[in-house]
Length: 106
Image 1: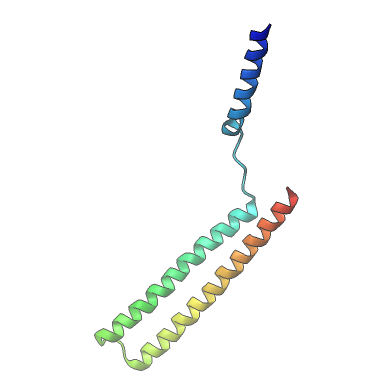
Image 2: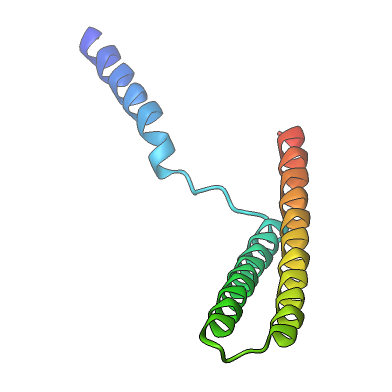
């Protein structure tokens, strides 16, 4: 009888320990997936804007670009980078807000 109780206790303990390995992973919400996708796109745009600034500076140093053209292109690239950075911050804020909502639900 003691062996049966010990065996049942052992099996119960084993199932309790192993349960997290066999349960399905939590599913991300569709909104979280869209936000992450948008964030990835914006991070790529930010990288492009920074590369554009570097290219413009290189071209002016090499003499391929006049100073007025450099100033105009630099201003456009900086404005684009600022715009993208603001959008990234907005997406981060929406992700934080949705995280807070999901924490309140649980």
